[in-house]
Amino acid sequence: MDEKKLYTSYDLDIWKRFAKYLKPYKKGLVYVLCSMLTLGIIDVVMPMMTQYAIDNFILKKTLENFGYFIGIYLSLGFLLVFIVYSFIMVAGKIENDIIFELRKKAFYKLQNLSLTYYDKNAVGAIMSRVVADVSKLGQNIVWNIVDMTWGIAMMTTMIIVMFFINVKLTLLSLTMVPILFLISAFFQKRMLSSNRKVRKVNSIITGAYNEGILGAKTSKVLVREEKNIEEFNVLTEDMRMKSLKSLMYSSLYLPLVVSVGSIGTALVLYYGGMSVASDIITFGVLTLFLGFTKQFFEPIRQLARVFADLQAAQAALERVLDLVEEEPLIKDSQSVVEKYGDILNPKKENWEEIIGNIEFQNVNFWYKEGESVLKDFNLTVKKGENIALVGETGSGKSTIVNLLCRFYEPSSGKILIDGVDYKERSQGWLHSSLGYVLQSPHLFSGNIIDNIRYGNENITKEEVVEAAKLVNAHNFIMKLENGYETEVGESGAMLSTGEKQLISFARAIISKPKLFVLDEATSSIDTETEHLIQEAISKVLEGRTSFLIAHRLSTIRNADKILVIKKGVVVESGSHHELLEKKGYYYKLYMKQFTEEKEIEVFGRNYEVVSN
Ligand SMILES: Nc1ncnc2c1ncn2[C@@H]1O[C@H](COP(=O)(O)OP(=O)(O)O)[C@@H](O)[C@H]1O
Ligand SMILES: [Mg+2]
Image (cartoon, rainbow, N blue to C red; front, side):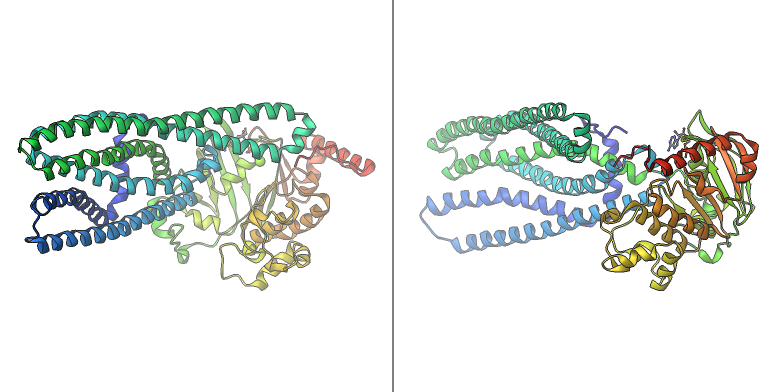
């Protein structure tokens, strides 16, 4: 998707799609619209009261019926206060409700969407949709509707009243309106878009700072400083030019509008003045018209701004709607949902217990049509068996376990769990019996206990400690300042990768899953922690059907069966010893690593370049 799509015109389809989401707020919206209509009318009536006062009290120098007049005037004033107060409350509530509702929908969607969605959409882009776009929309749309209704109501009432009083004078004072509107539309649009450009360059500059700071070490090593500074200067210069342009538009707009507006005022004053002199209209009417001519400008400015604003909001609106309405690629069928429930309402009473027999039957799989990753893949795994997958990067190991976890589904063929196609069970059923540890462990902000029992409040602290002991995490946790209550900081910034990995091991086993997947979970760990994890793994895998992907072959030596994968095909399989005896691909791989490890042992250094 093109995130930088800018609209130059209105796309009605998007607004129709959005109308659906406004439905629950119909009552409130109608109230707001009626309030704005009334306000628009009051804004016209108020100056008319002044006119009446001039003509009937001031010029005639009498106070007859002045009491009534004051009464009406005050009532209108109170009505105004009440309407302004209540519409701000109601519109504000709608704004917040819409933001809340869209965020909730988007979040729910994100929890439900298949991993393919995350392949195609960068995390940053998704975040900005959910956070920035949604709140921008809530504000933008609600208050723009408010301003627009008010502007239209006031202008219409004003024009009608003026026509009733004096047609010629009305036409004169309206002459400048189209010109004012054109100027406003021109400038509002440009002001908006140059503001946006400034913001965009600004965020690029922020990004450059970010890179400059985070990559400081790398830059130094690569002697990139001069080049970086050069690039940065180009950016800031760009920012300066764009800011100047934005400034120019803003400073030109007001004087232009005021000049054009005064031409209108002059015309009214000239013709109206003569009419007053020859008694065609009263002095009060002239004042009224002069007032109206000035008053016209505000709604015009507002309308021009609203149109530009809404147009700009279209892109954000489309992004949010696309997300909220995105269909997950992996969906439980209707009948499955009926029997097993969905994520929010699982019917656990109907869930069969997982035993752990797995079968891949003629599985073909591709991420992109025509780029086959697995071809006719067959594999039978018995309950409790430990399977290790070995192969070069890109050979398809992760794909195999992702299919097993049903993060993706076979493009053709079947995966059976305990003899049943897993599509005939719910995703929740599978995932609740699945322990999964990834290469880069992810911790959530909160303390260690919450991280280990993530999502399951029924788990006691004793159980957490037990799990932590099992995976050798207990010792380091106890050394932390607050033990299990230690806050891990955002994404676990306080802990080392190995420590985070131990915690995610504890998390993966605490619900005693029947199936277990470790995808390169030991790759980014120092050797010391690796021994701990090694031990943890063998304890964790005992009695569980498991898939283990590991870069270090020493980790998988004890697996019941090792599959050597090459381009999505199993080229060798067997136990460690069987494969070594075969003297095939595995043997070569093993000998290579073995020598490397020995070299490290002997020379005490690691040839791998470790980046931060
Ligand atoms: N999300 C994805 N979208 C498109 N192609 C992918 C995706 N993930 C992996 N691939 C491709 O599929 C192949 C197998 O990848 P993968 O299963 O991750 O290999 P391994 O885990 O063995 O390194 C590679 O060619 C990779 O580029
Ligand atoms: Mg992988």
